[in-house]
Length: 371
Image 1: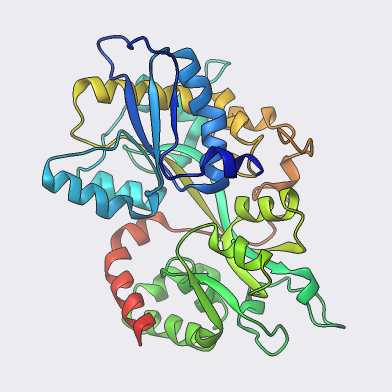
Image 2: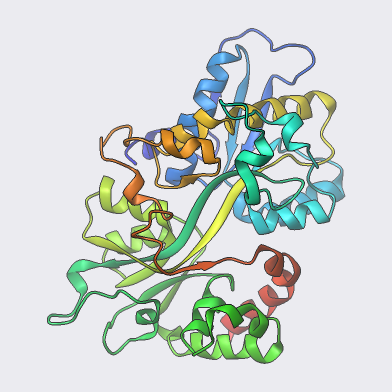
């Protein structure tokens, strides 16, 4: 979105409300960790700006290191110096951090807001509470965008996931994330593995080798990305024909930047993002962090975030409140990954699998990349 460049010009955006100190039982400052870009800007607009406005003297500083959250929190814990207060992570990372004792276990009904009609937080979030430490925020998907002006003449635009591997029909560079998650699943789907069998196959060495072999068929045509902003920029610059990224990033490049890009929703991978509070904070910092996440994940705030980015709010009670984009004025519901027209063929991410196998498959994937 247009506000991104001004709101997030650096990796440490600080918002300060007044000079008065916060109540003595809570810290007057927080370091919030997220992913940068349009997503972090949506959090800033929907959560942080109103929160500091309501809490005079409180400041919030952004760190854009969520992609490295597990490794960095492990290192901070080992050093006995946890400098982060609230961290945005994907569900699988929350499970790992919780299992390792690096994230605070919370009572969702005790520490989070009820829905406006009195429905408890645990019922409102439902199955999206995948860990005792995880505070759900949004449902998003990783999917593909492609340049509409680079579709070969006389050829239908790509509409199926296996178009990614079809260099003959759809020539040109691809971009894929520099990690095994999603790439391995798509590779197996396009190598004939049934959707329901993907994770059974992927837990074996043979299945991992099969996925890497399929990815090897396009490896020379792939630009590997690490930041969510990479694929939208590559698409905008015309350096790739198609590439994977988060659906909210594609919304931004299509609707806000008016680039000749379209979304291919087939086999989009649903995932969850939410907050964790690191274990080991002082009482004052922990109290401030919990106060913030209670505010930031109430029904209205989650609906407000959808004014800025096309991610579905994690609370059932928030969905009816999703309206129009804050600056474009367009209806946001049709741009959500959960919209029925977009969700005809989704792939459900297996959080438990990646919590268990991530480190080992990561090492294998990175070794393959280096070959």
